[in-house]
Each structure stands twice: as structure tokens, then as C-alpha cells.
Amino acid sequence: MALCISESMTSVADWKYLFDPDKALLAAPGLIAGLVLTWLSRNATNDAALPFAMVLIPTIFYVIIWWTGAGLEGARDAGWVGEVSPPVPVTDLFHLVNLSAVRWGLVHEILYTWVGMVFVVSFASCLDVAAISMDMGEALDTNRELTTVGICNVLSGLSFGYTGSYIFSQTIFTYRTQVHTRWIGICIMGVFLYVVTSPINILQVAPLFFLGSTLIFIGYDLVYEWLFEIRHKIFLSEYIIVWATFVAIQVVGMDAGIVLGVLVAIVDHVVSTAKSTSVNRVNKTSRAVWHPKEFKLLQDYGYNPQDPRIVTLEIAGNVFFGSSLRLLEGLTEECGIDVSLTPIHCTA
Image 1 (cartoon, rainbow, N blue to C red):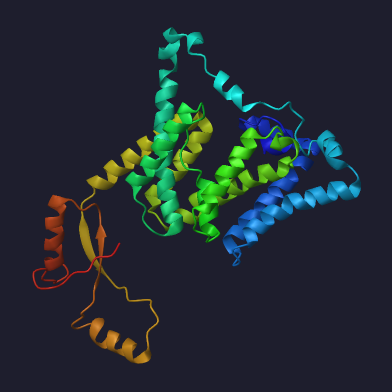
Image 2: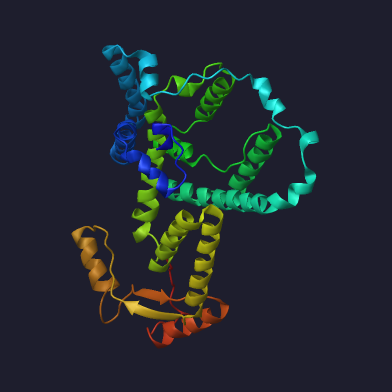
């Protein structure tokens, strides 16, 4: 939103800018475009729909300013594009660091920030790997992915850049386009190199609301997926941890919010671990669609009330080495299953 209206928005109080009619007008296209991109990413069946929309949105903007005669200068005066800024040579990057000007005696005062950044980036990388894995529906090699992030951070630091984790949104965009080729990465590197070396600041020619809408789109998608859609994928206690961490981050900041979330998770783990492990037989059957003859065989033999070949057991509590023995005893005593003779297939 800050990018759309060219104002700094770092706290809830800064949302007051949106009560200004002019600022609200600048923000509205970003909110609407973000909503459109979110809908397309989740509902469009054509792989080209999302990329096409991302090209069409700025194209419509340029057509409008040309048709109205406002031009880029008029759009800039109205706040739709960024101000013209002098070009910055690439060589200026190498003047950002002057070790002789560093006051080493103050290093201890930034240790908290440094440790916090290491923790946040490491934790965020783990979360990104898990999030991408869930979105793809297949497991990723976490160690390999984190190694990739680590190498990239070292290279970024050596070239006076910022540390980070995954570009989560870019990864998800690429996956959802169903175009799985390394050429996407090569094209992105080429564009980034052009942006760095180009004498033209992209913010002074691109509509700010479009750049903001891509971030708003990510915000819409992540909020819906991780605060609402995920409810049916995790336990209620885990869902409460998600919300508690989210609220804590908004109230006390990123670092302290994550620490509070971890503390809540630890308490939940201790409480759930302290509960006794039990196994109960529940009445559940296959929800698959079977051929009538196969369905009859399944009901007559698989789920036969007198001598069932298929039973469903529900495990409550955590299973450890000690509790696993009690679990096996429960299978025999409560469910009448001889574990030494009966094959057991477990699914999560």
C-alpha cells in the first residue's frame, strides 16, 4: 500500500493515509488488481491467464494516459508513477562499504539485531521450504534447499547485497504457470541485471499501483491460505499457534512475535505430550467410488460387522517408545486385534 501512495506505512496508525481521498484513489487500483490476480491464480485453468493479466494491467494504464493526453509527466504529477531520479552508476555499489570508517567498539550494540536477523532468516527459510512443499504437494530435500539459500546469502553479502531467504512468491508463480525450466531463472537474472545497470529507474516509468498490486496479491494469497484455508489441514491447537504468532508479530514486532509464537508452540507441545496415548476403534469406511460388484465385496467381507477384514483405528496422543508398547497392548485388549498375526497398514 505504501508503494501505491508513495508514503511510508510502518504501523497501524499509518493507515490514516487511506482516509485522504487522493491517497485512496491511488490505492484503489492496487487493491483491485491484487484481488484480480489472486482470483486468477486460484481459479484460472489456463496457464497463461496470470502472466497475461500481469502484462495487461500496466498496458491498460499506459493506454489510458495516452488516450487522455496526460502522458507520463501528467501521471507523475498526479502520483501514479515515481519521481525522476538521477541515474546511479553500478560502481557506486563498491563505495557503500568503508571498513576504515567502522566503529568496531559499537559492535556489541548491534549483536541483538544480528542474532535476530540470523534467526529470522534461518527460520523463514525453513518455513518457505515447508510452504513451497505444501503448495507443490510433494516433499522437498530441506537440507539441499537450505544449502542453496546459504550459498546465495554468502554471495549476496560478498557483493554488498542484502540477505534473505526464498523469493517465495516468485517460486510459487513459476510453479503455478506449469513451466518448469531453468530458462525462467536465466530470464529473471537477465532482467535483474538490466534493472541494476539501466540508467532509468523503473519506478519513474512503471505505474506504482501495479508494482504495489503484485505485493498486495502476495498478501491476499498468503493471508487466505495461512490464516483461513489451512484450518482444515492442521490440529486446532496448531491453528491457534498460527494466529497467536501472527497477532504477536503485529503487536510487538517480527523478532519478539516469533519468539512468543515459539513459546506458545512449546507450551502446546508440553501439554499434548503429557496426555496419555490411547487407541480407539472408529466407524469409518472408504469414500472412494467403487464398481457395484466391488462395493458389495467390500461391504460383505471388508467391513463385515461379525468378522471385519478392514478396521479403522484412531490414535490420540503422541507415540513414543514407551507409549508404543501400550498402544500395541491396546490394539489387542480393546480392539481384539492380534498384532502378531494381523498386518497393519498405517496412514496419517
